Length: 249
Image (cartoon, rainbow, N blue to C red; front, top):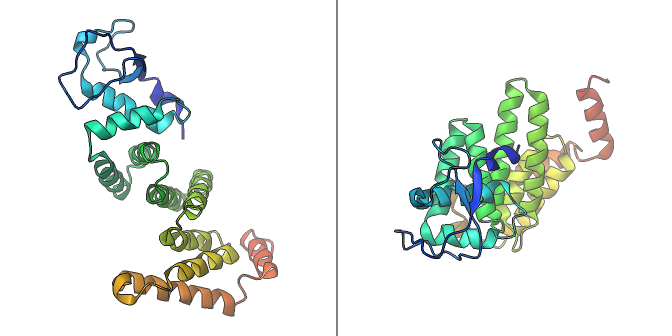
């Protein structure tokens, strides 16, 4: 991930008192500079305020939300986006999922980073980002790009941990993290995740869970039993597995 390059296409402007937008949805605080996405045709140092389109501001804000996490005006920028585009979360989520399915990894990552910037405290967004990074790592590993795969696995682990730390707890975060740790051969951590998932869903009746929820509970219990019966969560087993996997039989 490179958060610097995209920001080079954004500049910050102050809106003059006599300037009005045709889009009434844009409620502007003129004391706060606005990020503006440069046009391809913009010449350096030749900005024309009369040619400024609201779409440039929205695009600039989305870029800042994705890549400038320490900007002091993030809450204000989020409020502008939500006023101007009330359905922006749904649009971005659908686009990110579609790009992930098409393995358009770079654009999908930008969309997930934007969603995370827009909704930093939403555990569902955090979990979806973890799942994306997990899938990207798998794709790279299948292609033999092991260093890239490891890097994205590390990022996925951080997002899974954040999703599991959410309050109130998000059961699906533990279920999906369990499979992530299985792939990492961290069977003790995987078992703990599945046990937590079962604990969080034990009081939910089958009707409310639905067919998918019932399947998840059965699958989680099955994996727990397999790990327990084969002593896969035993530290000695884990150490031996790692040595064998690295060719040190």
